[in-house]
Length: 625
Ligand SMILES: Nc1ncnc2c1ncn2[C@@H]1O[C@H](COP(=O)(O)OP(=O)(O)OP(=O)(O)O)[C@@H](O)[C@H]1O
Ligand SMILES: [Mg+2]
Image (cartoon, rainbow, N blue to C red; front, side):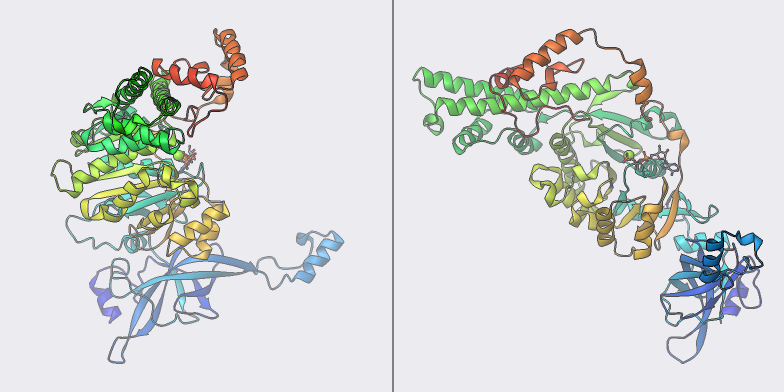
């Protein structure tokens, strides 16, 4: 049956139906099972990670007949022994300090035993493209093992029916580690309608891999939203000319109070503030709900009006004038404390805004066209549109605020998709440093507004064309339930045992052997698995040198330290530091270090706090880069 089908393809086949382009590289030995086998490998004819094939007769489904299956497998381990050079001989050479070459012993009779993990079987003419099914009967010891042609392996990896028009869209990410002639691609449909996690320790090549995938999606004109805490993706804007059909836009965050997010903003204000007593909290909530919101105003302006409101209440109380019943019983010191908390929040917000501004105005970003982010409720189509790449540059904001911004933007965009408002097309969101946006419970999830939003998107996004790419260097700090819902994974170098264990627990089909090699990967080498590929593959990600940005590349701190000259205002700084150390005020960095510290709004909280040493609230006033 198999032979006759093979003859119809017109491909050159040997007498046994094996394509003539396939090289014989070894012979099966020892115990073979339906999940794996070992074979003796011809010297230097195969290596770890290679896809190999062998053939076996298996019983047909019903009538007792048999048919020939092509069994595909991956070499997961190779051991090498020389029976003609036993340990005793080695011991003797060591003791006598004699070189091996000076003896008559044979060094060329090595046994190379390769262990193969079976990936599946195909039947019929085209060994790669056909339906893959499990092996139901073990491989025969003595069977020949082949090194298949690149085209056959590529077809096997994608499982595509290449006769289909148009062919399914692919995201080309690189090649097999073991075979530079076999390209590895992800199914575009699976990536955009499901979710992908890119995990690796720092320097493993996550950003390079993400840029590769982003580039492929840009080529497809797919709408992208990138949340970028460090500016790793800003370089795409600089490379706009490489993407003539797309538009790359860079946004800076702006917290404005709108009908759609008033709840989220007030929650953020509450979380950013100091811990309050019950009475202070009562006033705080009163101020929140009794200070009218002006639609579209900056959150900072809203907070300032809350502060003014509190000042007003305490002034009235001092004069014995009438105040609302709800705040009538609240004492003056309580009002002062709640006010201080609000001033602290305001100063914090202003400082982060200043940080972001300062970072954007660095010399290296000259020529970048940063714009205030559009309102994702009212103008989602400014953020998501065909061929549009929206990069949100979040640097300078602390984790809580970054998380709130991601939450507000995603929440609004997803609402548009899930209510089928028809305003925006499907899109893919890319979230760098995902451990800050979907932290595990042990990281303190109640501080993270983006967690419930991302959970919702990851669970329901598939139905509404909202896909996520989550990128993280600390997988074990990610929320497990969320990560487990990623349908595809690209795992590059990982060394930390906790991270490796965690990755194994969320990736169903990662074998122990695969987990063990994670730490041996070089930059850009990794395992890709899940729905976007047919089975787990060892991949070398393609490095797009032309996407490397001059502005974003690694800073040369050695050179910078060499050039560095003290600031002319150094003396003034020293004095202010000395003054502040005496008072140990929170957020000492706010007014001392940067070229443009927080604006006027920041000073009141700073001044307040100066008089009250040790009153450091959660979040602090440190710049976050
Ligand atoms: N596919 C690749 N091929 C060749 N070199 C690579 C590849 N990927 C990464 N590298 C090298 O490793 C460096 C770090 O890569 P990258 O910035 O992507 O790491 P990362 O995992 O994002 O690190 P971090 O966690 O610090 O952000 C790159 O500058 C490049 O030199
Ligand atoms: Mg990175």
